[in-house]
Length: 312
Length: 120
View (spheres, each protein chain N blue to C red):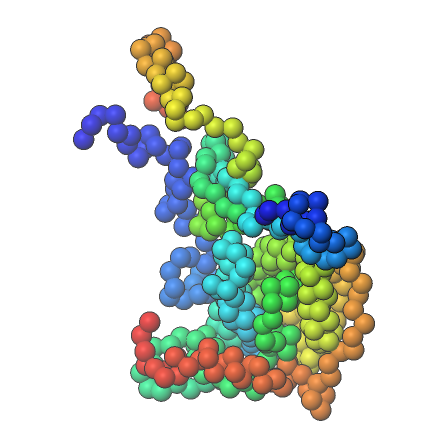
């Protein structure tokens, strides 16, 4: 070896990637994929009703899972490579949140986990994701709407992250250690999602006639499902009362104020579109979903269901 | 594109008030290129790690975060439009760099550097 070749030690300060493999502590939940809650105190604190905790974690987990899948459908379809990576990143953040939340639901009350065939290696969070029917999902209907164009993706990520960030900022104070830890991690992720979407929102609104009209159309399209995000389901009320969760109605004002800032910066008026009513008063949180979710799940779950004993 | 207007000498085609698209500037075919610099640790320099396309400066920063710091590589990012960089040309290599080769007195090789002083 010629003596002018640098050793890796000498070169370390030239590489932005130096120390990459020795910084495992930076990963809040580790880098392996064994137990997503490893290292977190998963005992259920005194005074918390386990079934309520499980039902509440399921709602939050389903929101992220369904939203994640919709955004992941953009992979390889975004207008530019850089936005493709950005949207994939957002989808992966949400998937990570979902995994922790579904695992928490299963740990709190294993009766929510569907029974799998003998010998299936699927962990409980996978059983929840891949072996429930649409009516068993508790996500808000906003998350499941079929994708539109890039303006629609922008509005979708903006509204979703504005709402979710307002809820999760308070969820950090949850009396459940796991939900609190998930929220602390999630708030950083959601802040980025909101920033990314808000910037595109203003850019498209102030861009060309075409981009503005597409953005306004997307806003009108999604707006009817916005109020549902702030409805209080009995499970959320019970979770909030016991200190585990957050009543979304209490963050409406804060969320609307943030959204108004973005609308003002973009010079976009608040849409005047009526909210979409539930079916006999039931909405996403009650398991009442549109056909869109069934179709999405059919695709998302097909491989896992065809091979329930499959090892990945 | 060649000038197809009457003034361009291609016959009396009246263009005034007609949306022909001739005078509309073509949209930029591609977003501008940005160079990305990441500082890996506190106390070290920003190092060039690559480039990307972005719609504007701030968006370039967000994209750089997604593309180049996915695995905890950085604590700080700089982005700069590639067309704002003035670079030396390979043709100038000899006049620019060769003369320093034999000037040993420019290298701090006559000092003993203590072992506990890093990054010199």
